[in-house]
Every structure is written in C-alpha cells, then in structure tokens.
Image 1 (cartoon, rainbow, N blue to C red):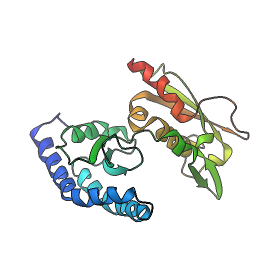
Image 2 (cartoon, one colour):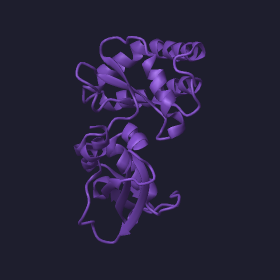
Image 3 (tube, rainbow, N blue to C red):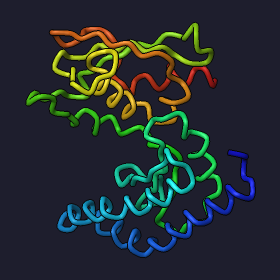
Length: 225
C-alpha cells in the first residue's frame, strides 16, 4: 500500500467517517465507565460498538480491527480507540497509515496505533483457564537476547507453567498463553517490531529465573536508544 496515496486517503476517510458517526455514543459510554453503577453496562456497550468499526477498518486492510482502551487512555482522554492488526505483521504498515490519516477527534477521545502495554497491576491480576486449570499471566517468565538472524530484534525464551499448554498451540506447547502474556506486557508494536524467535520451556515448578513480561520493555527498547 503506497504511503498516503489517493486510494489510501479515500479508504481512510471512509473509515474515519464511520468513527465520527459513533462519536456521541462513544463519549457518552466513556463518561459512564467512570461510574461504578454503570461501568459494566458501559463496558458491554463498547463490545457492541467495536464490530462495526472493525468491519470498517477491514475495508482499509483485511488484517485490521478496532478495540477500545478504557484502562489507560492518555491524560485528557476518557477513552482510546485502538487500531490493531492482532499481532499480524502483514497489517503493521496499514495500522500506522490509517492512524496517521486520522482527523482531529473531539476532546475525550484519542486514537492509537496498536494495543499498548497493559498496566503491570492488571497483568498481575489476569489469568486464563486452560482445560479447567487456571494460569496466571504473571507466572510467565522471559529472557531476551539479541537475535543473530533478525538484526535489531530480540529472541525470547519463555518459561511457562505446564498448565499453559493448549490444543491451539502451534509449534511449542504453551505458545498461545506465552504470546498473550508477552503482548500484554510489552504492547503490540514492540511485539511486531522488536521480537524475533520465541521459544517456550514448560516448567512444573514456578520459574525461578527470568523477567515478567512488562520488565522486558527497557531491554527491547535498547535497540532504539
């Protein structure tokens, strides 16, 4: 896709027209998120709004979708619109281009390319259930070394609890949960731009070595320093 060509601008304008048509609903929902009495209903409303925006984003590029970040929007914003390619590198450039072509949005709304890192306290409280067994995302441990085959990237070794293995894993058992925790910790953009190969080692005891996913950020950012 050519950078900001006529076709890209036209397709982006169509997407942002759909977003602007939802602005009133988004701002009202964002305001309700702050009230404990209406928080659950407001969160459900965001789930209902996302598919229409995601469908519009896929008209720009087939790998794109839209989510919302009500947890850690930037200062001055109540809600952040996230344009994501769900960790698929084929859509990385399209995400950047669509966000670069965003118009000014009303106060209270912000748009961001890629899912940001989740706050550590959110990851520490998060767990997934695999075959009836719960796995805490904070129990995953990682190490990173400069990649010989992918200059500017880091190869990742993850120590994962044996309970993290799922039927959906491709290659290494535990890879689905390991990548979920890694993406939550470092954010989607670093996952796409800074990570090379990922290996998994299943453990039967909590890993004594390694870093939690969000602790990898300073190391991964060394390549840009």
